[in-house]
Image 1: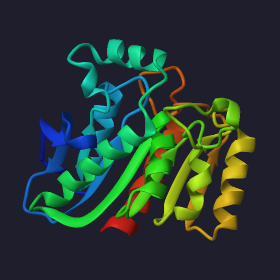
Image 2: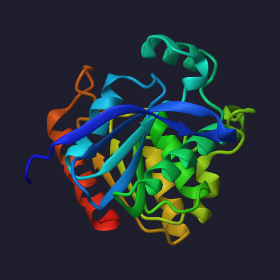
Image 3: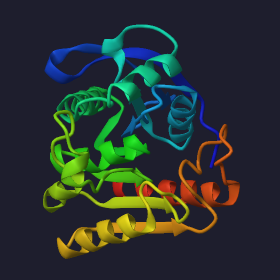
Image 4: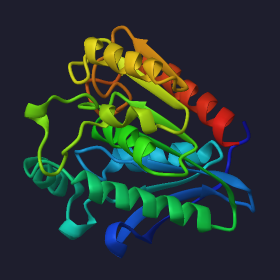
Length: 247
């Protein structure tokens, strides 16, 4: 692939209830048309690893937005804000859905858009991706990277997360790719197998890949959990999947 010059900057988008927030927006130079991707950041926050992943996807020919789900908390260090949000139980599902829908609208409104938009996220972002792919119209492809709590019993539900994403599986209206580490505990192998069984039960189009020797966050290059061989293979599967469904 030819190296792509990128345009990367912080922009404003309209999210849930019309609230204006900030987002990182990366795209190739040129007229396109380019497929769009919403990268849904993880619970640690709108931090460096998410921005790096946004740029990486843009380098591969996508117009990518990573909207800050925590913009209502104000300015400050992303890790500090993420810690506060984690302590507060994260973002409410309905608010997240409104923000992701706003990011999708932003991408499709750009003159270089080809009209297709995919979603991707890991950890809590993987859970959000699964939920959004089931709840939001117009998603063309979704990638769940080790999304925790896609399956959740009644004891794990609350006012912010009143329904487990798995319970919306019948409404999934796009192909889904899932990447998981066999040493992960959230989701563990049993949960991944149960999720796959439910997708199969509802006749959904999906691809699940499981990696030995990998646990949670095995893509994250700045953590001890990083596993280079598994991460390289996982990224290649993402490029192939989005290439087939968004181009």
